[in-house]
Image (cartoon, rainbow, N blue to C red):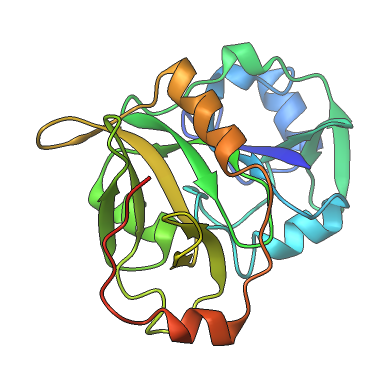
Length: 222
C-alpha cells in the first residue's frame, strides 16, 4: 500500500512529540504546514500498528525521518492518521500544505519480489547509498539514464532482484533508476519514469544459486 509519513520540522507551537489533545489545544488543529514529508513509498504493511512497528525497528531504505513517534502523521488509502500517545486518530490533513526538502531526486525504485514504483530520494551520497544498502555502482542504460545498485550486492548475499542483459546477468538487492548527465545524477523525466516503471513492473523469482552463478564481472547493456 502506498504510505506517506509526515513529521513536524517547524515546531512553531511546541507540539513536536506531543499528543493529540495537547496539539489541538496549543495549535488549534493539526497543522500540515508544520510538517515535512519523510517517506512516500509502497510497503506491504496496511495495518497502522504494523506500520508503527516497522518504522520503529527496521525502517525502510527510503525513509528519511526519525523513528515513528507521537505527533507524526501517517497517510494511506484509508486516510490520514495522527500518531497519538495511544493508538492513532483519524484527522483532516491537507497534504498540499506540507513541504519537502529541496534536493529530492525523482527515481524508479526496484526491490526484490515487488513491482517497481516511483519515488524520491535526497540527491546526496548518504541517501543514495542507503537506498541500495551499501556502496553504490552506476550502470548506464544507454539512454541518458542509469541503474544505481549495490556494488557488493551479490558478494554480501543480497537477494536476486532482476535479470538484465537479456536475462544473462542479475542485479542483487534493491536498486533505483535515475537520469544521468556527464558527471552527475538527475531526476527522471515523465517519459523515463514511465519507461522504467513498465520495464520493472513484474517481480522476478531468482534463486540464490542463480545469483551465486553470476558472481563474475559482467558488463550490463540493454
